Amino acid sequence: MSEVEEKKEVEKAESNVVPIGMKVGSQRTVIAKGDEVIVVETCIKEKENPITGEKDYVIGNEAAELYGDEAVYMLRGGLPGNEEEAELLKIFLTNVAKQYEIPENTYVTYGIPSTEAEEGVNLFKKVISQVPIGWAGKEVWNDSFLAALALPEGLGMLDRTFVVVNLGSSTTDVVAVRKGEIVFSMVTGEVSGDLVDRWIKNEIMNLTRGAVNVDISTAREYKEKYANLKEWKSVKETVQLFEKGQFSFRLDEAVNKPVERYLDALVDFITLEFLPSLAEFNFKAYKVILESEFILTGGMAEIPGLKEKFETKLSEALGFGVKVRSPENPLTASARGALLISQLRVRRE
Amino acid sequence: MSEEVLKKWDSLFQELKTFVEVDLPKMEESVKKAVERAKILESKVAEVERKLKTFIEENETFKRSVEEKLSSLENIVNKRLEELEKKVGEERKAELDLSFVEELKKEIAELKNSVAQLSVDVSQIKSSVGEKFWVAREKKAERKSPRIL
Image 1: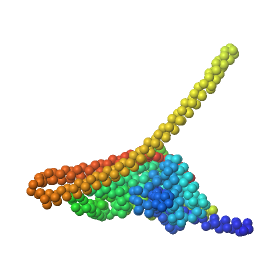
Image 2: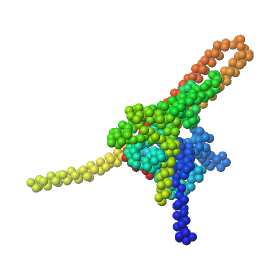
Image 3: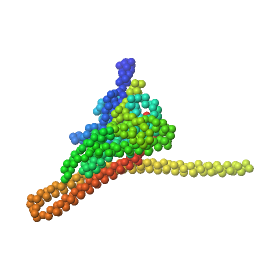
């Protein structure tokens, strides 16, 4: 092959770079590729081949469906905490890339939560350098910020001032952004989706006087199916109990009460912890932020009516009307925002 | 006069020399020790966090195993009771004191209720331990680019 032909081949290969946006969450990993959005459970189950004795892995949705609580969700707060979890994440991402046909010649922008845990970020960096995707380039951004880019303004959000409230499964991130710079952010595990799952499990036990003890993944399924603050519909579940026979309980109560409790805790966190800390740290930014809009994102923001109730409760707590917006499909917003950055890089290169 | 000044300088230099040769290495040593201690403390904190995590996981497993065992125990007792009642009914209904069976029934029902309550309590304790664990990990960051790497 002549030098010119070789150069042409390289150029051709470069032009075929596929931009990818990926949000690796503690509960779910979301991959945005073109118009396609893939949502996979971030879990893995190690098993042994009964014939060869070799280690084998079942990952993602299949692992969650087949093994329930036995499947290992290797991340906490969106990052691996130790080498062992990092290794599981590497295996998971490698398998996801294979299963969903993500080519090696990709530019990948990853979204992770805002964190001061350097160890977790370093482990994540190590993992993504070992996963066979992102050969054309890779970068890591704050996932809450990325979610704001999924709003109709897209990259235009870089000129705006706003607060992102990212309702994740294991943490809640509140990030104040002023013209593309994170002014202040706080993360808490006190308000999180998986706590709601546990509260639902407890609520079901209370309602059935201890007779029904659902596993956490079932509690989460109930939450995703029946949580609705817009229209509280009565949903009954029936179970056979010893000596009592058929026993019915209100599933909507078991689900919506914990969601309401979660919402109260969220408003408390913002009004009693985040905003006072911001005022203490930078009063000018605090004043500007108060007048700007709140962007609600993350998996929990998918619950119907949650955004509206949050707006009402926050406005009541602050004593003035607050504007709250949500990107379309909040669960996948970070990955779609990340895709915008990858697309921009590929176009420029 | 100049001799006095020189003497003063001399003594000052001597002090400085002692400080550099004796005190400074000691200070260096203390700083090193403090850094080492901080590292040890950090690793201990990490260890405590790890143990807490393991504790939460073990708590879950323990709770599950207790619940499974209690449930199977309940089943066995129920089955035996049914068998006993059947036998009583069929064979020596008149001779046997049925009040004993009734009492046993009551006791089992009470036992079941306590088990249910215990199960709820364990679940709530587990939740609160989990919550405390994550509250303790709350972090905040100030002024930085949204790009991390």
